Length: 313
Length: 313
Image (cartoon, rainbow over all chains, first blue to last red; front, side, top):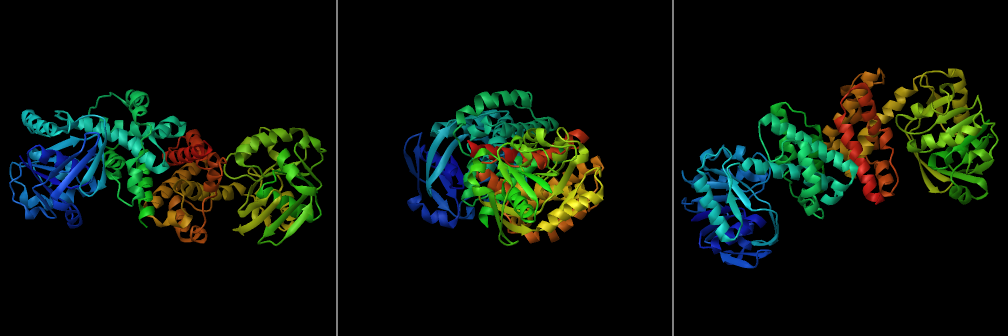
């Protein structure tokens, strides 16, 4: 399979290394600076899935340097770069090229439709963790569940999605196809909108947030508002309502990640943008659209953005 | 005049020193530990009003050690200690003893009524700043306006309040009486609920909060909610609505205190309780009472309380 990985961050490095190593023909796109830093086009992975390295077919700074014959594109840029990355891909997407959106949060599928027809868009839910050690060298630190891929409106035959999932899975990244991908995407959004954002504001780990009464009350409201929005959208997830979700949230979901610190806090401290607009920010936009009040997600969004700017100044 | 100052913190030290020095008979109450630390009952003040010292008549750890012949009590404990302090005073308040509440925020007048009849309660608005250098030794750092004193329901003749204001004023602390004291108390609450609380959460000065768009939007909402509550209460202040207030807030009120850091942040960092329950927390309670939605003040209250607890642990 001819595969293009867009973005050689922690995630893109893992995908490109594993897929190339498993006999596929993988090219990667990143900035000029990154292209120069990855020597001999060799990407490497270490961590819980062992040590791996692979020499990619191409690493370029512009997709236009490549032939337009890709079967699959994996977009691993951050959600706030989705549109720009897709704009740059315009010249090299074939009519049959499938594109996996590997971004966090809500809104990526919607944004992508301005550049790619819906029938080619695959949405993913990724909950393994990877961090960059050096440019093109990633460490896989943790995995909570298989990567899931799917077509939000089921416009791609499940058999074909299964084949793509199988290719990823065979390469060493646990993956399966789902015909209800948005359900799983939303479950990750809820979890992150409560813990990641508030953890970034208060600079404490997830366990602490779940332990203190005041932060519990804030997270309960964040989650309640999201369930209200989901109900208005007609979106169903594994829990029928926020009460049922909260029970599992405190008894099962948080305890296994109690020592985890918000990745958003690290983003802020490193002067990077966060993906707040695809999490609590997206809840507010959807709330407006469906006329659902989301004041707690609103203030959480503003506080994270204020913290971003305070560091960047 | 026989005066009892309750609490020898920064503020209590200033009041007791100036009033004693001006020929009044001043006693003070504080903890046993504080009583021992203030040597020879001498309290001192430095700062923008010059250097002063005075030997108080008494410094005791329990009001019951004193005779019940006070004309005036000045309560300078923090708002969250109002009730306990008044409980301790029960035995020594005469029928004619007036009591000045020198606490911040909303709710002190209401709480005091369980211990003192309304006709004896004087509410104050204090916007000079003082900090403790040593026990019984305070520095006056800044003054924005005279101390104002008044009876919220005008149950004390303005002439008598004028006499009390005059005594304080003559002692060296600028002071005047007002027949609309709650208006001024509310104006201070609005200012503090926006800047002090948010400054404590984000750990930046007032100027920064007013400069960034995201924090502006949060403060605008905090203030809007307070104006909604005030309207429901039928409480009038100098600005007819939040829009008019906000114009002055950004153009006049904040610029003069742009470099100011939230005193609430200092309280948190020193492991002390903050007065959040008398500020944004009081807005939420009043919102409930008058059926006005106050979600932004609610989350601000919770975040400050979470920060308090994170340091105390």
